[in-house]
Image (cartoon, one colour):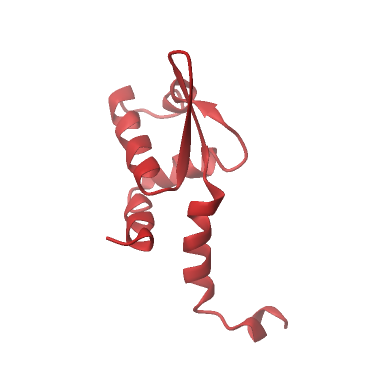
Length: 93
């Protein structure tokens, strides 16, 4: 599976899309992310793992804590693919 397929799979769940939106501008601890959802912490951990494997978030460990942030390089693949549907001339209008 190529990177685009993995990224699209990563976005296929509404919880994962919401997590990515939460991480758009901030790095957050896994617990702080989990606190924003009405699902179990293991479920949030699963979604974070899928996003990490898809290259959409990065994980940083500090002691026993894990911190997550959006991976702009991984998201760039999606941006380029979506932009391929809109010729540059359309942006210049």
